[in-house]
Image (cartoon, rainbow, N blue to C red):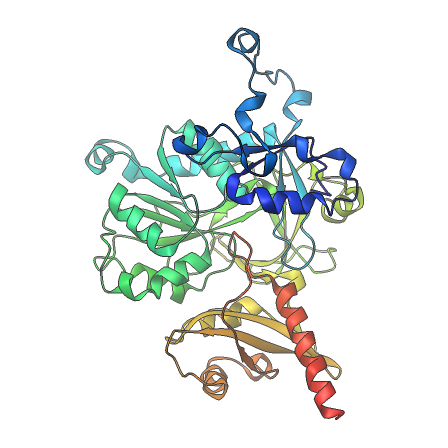
Length: 459
């Protein structure tokens, strides 16, 4: 809220107390007070209450009477200036630092909606007589609506395509599986932690849930090893579901790269460019374009590209070049077929004696272990270099030891990628609501562990 400086705020009853506490920490409390906070009811019964909790007001207290409301009208974007007005602020994940407010314009939203809509229209199974035999599509929103991908898919594309969409109030893996069975859902757009969690879920693997209605699954937000995708696909023994990856980032208002829906995915590629999107793979210093097959930083340019970072002009200049390219901060490779492969975030590489090690690659290998249900890897500074350390969540009841993890990783990686900084077992991996690992928290934990170890040595 310090960044946004809102004029009013609407929250659910469950969040009211947290909101009031956060108001106390505002740098400029004059911008918003308790009088500017309104409660949004979750259901009909709550809406019948005469008073809101904690002395707040219900949201319907700001509604105009019918006579006054009859004079209201939407402002139509009649020219490029009004279409470039900011429609929403979507905050970046903040995995390596503080989140930034991404200014998404009306033009950005519509542009990416039409780009993705075109990709959906390529699906030959959804056209002609076969579409009628399959029945209508039913989508499930299992992501927060404030997430960039959810905003463009479920706020713009789903209404545009007249697709029935079920929105989860809170995410729970078994609730999601039950919803698929109950509502006969056909399409899922999800993120790697959900894919991995479902593929390792005992009840799902034993066939407790009827998932036969699912036709398409798209996974985005972070790299996913092909082996993990295949483990997920095994939930459909007849191989009717092929998980396809896509590449998206908040600064591009959605997905600039997607797989053709008519092609079967057999690798970790995230696909091809959507219409009206350009991309280049640049050297890390940004001075030359890299040829196919060699990795570098992915730069994108498209009408869906953000207006900039909210109230952060210097940060905006750092990522948008003078000729309009967005430096995504992601390391990628373009193969000979024009397909893009995402390696990892540029800032998250672990520099081991001059070599660059991608944490996502090591996490993918760790998650293939049957007794590991989640993992996060960060670099730990030791002497004059960094070394990888893994934080691992074991399956309940598992007695997996740190040495067994090291022994498992050694033959599956080159020596420079060994977990030389050790293995730590934790109850959970810190993640954003969209599923991205919050490595800054893991790095802080590693630094605290190092301080504790040094203090022991000094005793």
